[in-house]
Image 1 (tube, rainbow, N blue to C red):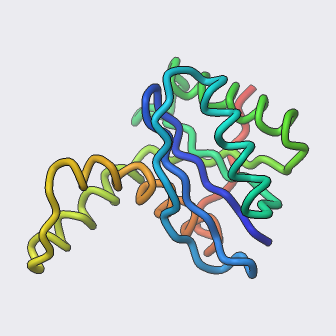
Image 2 (image 1 turned 45 degrees about the vertical axis):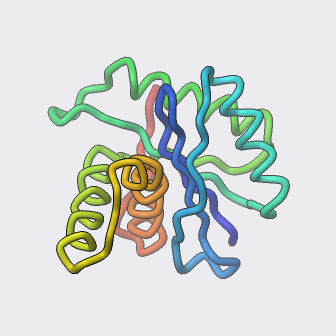
Length: 147
């Protein structure tokens, strides 16, 4: 099942896609947006173009487990996407995915790869989406419910 992961942000939205079998996650793209509606319209285009069957949306839950404004906004985005796309939408806790993605980029830099600040910034959100998508596909990241 082709799955699209979304790491939502106010200005950048990271996207990752699974393969058709739903086993491997790959960073796809970082969208630069000025509003949630702009993000939704661009995401809907990706869903159509890539034949996406399911959406996995990362929700930035606070470290203490509470739901803050960013998590509420992400959940609202997920509800709107589900309604407008007609696709199954799963919410997952992505609170450490950006950290894990950043550590991966640092490891690559230490190994000798040349990564500029601009490249890091442009890749980070898509890498974070790929990180939590792979964990979800591997059965290590359960679905969460937000009222």
